Image (cartoon, rainbow, N blue to C red):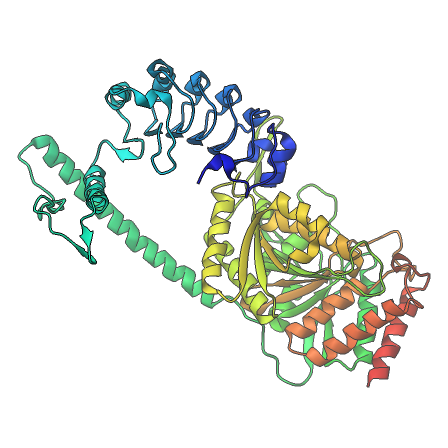
Length: 598
């Protein structure tokens, strides 16, 4: 296969541009690109490749490159494939001091002197100037002493032209080469390989045994090795114990509660601003639907307990602890020094670790998108919203992003279980592990582990910025998306915008110990509070989510259908839905449709 003739890739382009790089990687910031493959594109001008300052692996094989100058700024590059180009001058590579693997086969390097530019690359381990597989070479390889000279120039390299020159791997290579030479010699006849007395086992029987020595230095090294081995075993035991603890926590991860027939008590937190109005609307619709729900109303404002710690009122906490299920209107957070976000306080109080927000297009409510049907699942308890901030010096503030294995595993497992239980086909993990390799890397690793346990659900992983780009281009490609806290806060609102805004988007928060709070996620709208102008749709659809969580699917379906039919009919709509009706009129229209279904 000749890479220069491989036209299975994109159409030929002469110069590397920012547009090309962004289209190939999905990265808007060129410094975020870590791996890049541009094979067989006919490139002869490296253009802006030097702006990819954090690039670690680069494949430019099968192009028409002659000038390597732009590569000189890639100080973090470890793997570089330049095979099948038209390169003769290697001088720009001398500054790529992280380079470990370099493929130059199939170019026009003619002199040994040109290789001297590579001698400054102290980490270089593998060099290839010819490749017999593809019949690639360089003029310099015709020198009868080429191999000896190169090995003298680079005494620390491990591999030259694909052949190991140091280490025990060379024995294995030689064994494979003997087999290959035998076959090439035509000695493989009638399905049998003719015995060759000169072919011997490639290692002796005692090869793998640890050899003791009287040398004091070796003895000390052997002792230290055993000490390290012992420490590794201790660490393994601790890891096993930690795994069991996580497993126990996983078993405690709450599943949707099973509710028996009869009346169910739900804690109602009306909230602030328009909260009481839309809460009243929901209660009226539930009454019309004869939903078996009785409401236990509680007001929630942050109070300071002993030691100045912020907390919700005890009667509200006791109500939630007892009822387990809550419905919450919008809450305002007082603008005062040290006053916590009320929503954040609720999440932490009840360990509401999963925010679930379905975004489904509503028939009759016109938006630029008509077929959105996805669910965002957001880790709700940590990340940038852990609230860990401090001043380092005047004018410099540090905020800590906290990611834990237990929380990442819990949200990943929940996302896959949600997809399976709701007949969803795929889960996409949204991350930035290319930049935050440890924190987002841990989150992504837990998602991959969960995917291994749920083979029936398709799993993909995608950078946050790429998801945002693709989401506004074609949201139908997504199904269930799971992500850390901050990304979820942003992306869930973006998705809500696709279907008409937060005023028509439901939301639920699933917590530990069987607690769940469903809520409208829009603001308190104090400018229209008390004027009978509010739209109760978001809180109503959140209440429908609550009914499904409780297993009351029949009542949920009746109320949801009545709401959607009212919107589709377009006769009685609040102002934000395109009508001029009052909140009470919109509520009564839904109530009438609910009664008509009885």
